[in-house]
Length: 299
Length: 321
Image 1: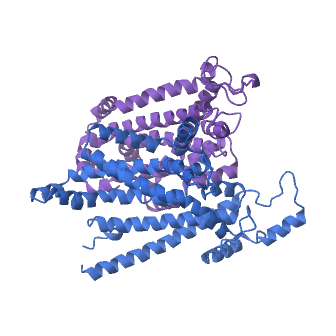
Image 2: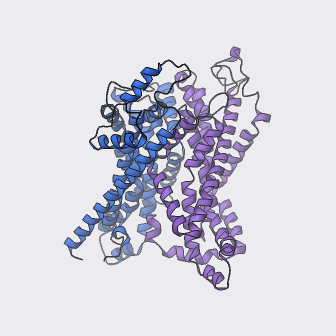
Image 3: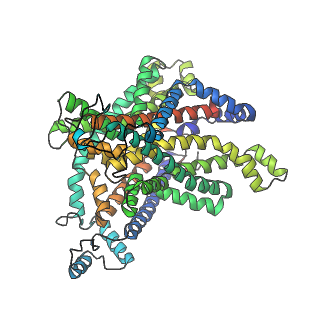
């Protein structure tokens, strides 16, 4: 925020730069590919997607399958990541945990988009009372601590995967709505919009033809960066014991379950935390890369 | 625009912001109150075991005023809250909410205050060093650590610290509270994220100021390099520091639920979870109000410092130069 207020000049240059519709996407792709971290992120994310969504096919066993005979095995041999205290194959558990994380992350962000984007669009396009109402809702929700609100909602509607998706979704649409609105507000004042209006274009036409396509890039970046945040929220709630419960494997729950045994069975804590860190890093690298690639200031 | 005129404007500004804070507190308390009571059930709702006889239940409801209409409950609670009486926590009926918070908060502060000091000093140093040696290996190491600190959840870091220092090296106890050694890992785990934020923003702020016109002018007119760095660069580099990092302080002071869970610290954080789970209405409201006040006050202080540091920014968006 401070940076944009102190330097308005690069912005003006940037606006000149984006108005080359044919080559913008091409340049963005090239900028993305040139960033090493973003490419590393892409590799990590691809690997995790295969591991997670391929879990039903690739995992050594079913995630509910446990044999007490094989409980508390250290990593190696038959069990590459060991087994847990009731004899689940830990590689299977971690793979299905990644799958849960990804599912919750994508679905929660989808919910956030369904709430945030229409509200932000309504506020930015219609202005007036709609804008006032939406902005006040956002302000009040910002004043209310997000995690506390999420915990609260979970105790109201109960835990479980569907409810967790809903709770994370309805507590994380604020950024998207605010961004959408801000985009539309700046774009509305652009010369080409005035030009279109003076040529007799209707409001709907202007919104669909001129405003939305230009507002898309930063929103895509925000959506990409919202995914790791949602995944973090799920891991956190499950870590506190109010998120996803057995039998669905959740990485956060696995971390907190490992606490009593950590002194001996270190693998129970290490592998789920590594998986969480990898997910967060992968998606953040891709998101940062996308932002740098799509940011018109990079021209 | 005499000094007294400026002081007056500042006074008016502070008063109007405080009034705004009161309004926000009112809205937040009403929303929290309604949400709490919108939840089906309640602290004394008959559970499936149905242990509590109906007469006892009614007596309990009456004792805590839960049998009265909502708006009366709200007005009563807020009236008492204004006198710092937040009632009796249902989860620990032998004390008051105030004494419960007074007991748990110092524990949280003992982690939070060193966290603020450590993360801010180390983060500033790392950010300055990285900016001064842009694109050197120091810069890359700092950037990488900052990314890790911002992206990896702190309970994950906490577990790695436990695995390394307690399990592998056997130097520290994995958790608990009371001995000085119990402070080390929570403070380190908790410091990483704010430190990363500080380092990242300090770095980019300094780089931006170094390239700006007024620094070039200061150098061109022959000002000593030390003075340029301290006065022009230092002062302007403080702006993102104030706007982005100050709002983190109330977060840190109210404690991390995750850090306190990871290291089994009996602080304020765990009450966020237990209070919502046990429908401890007085405790929930007290916690929400406490956080809202801390945040509100921090935002006001942030905005005031912002106007002092950057003379181009005017109070409340008016151009009264």
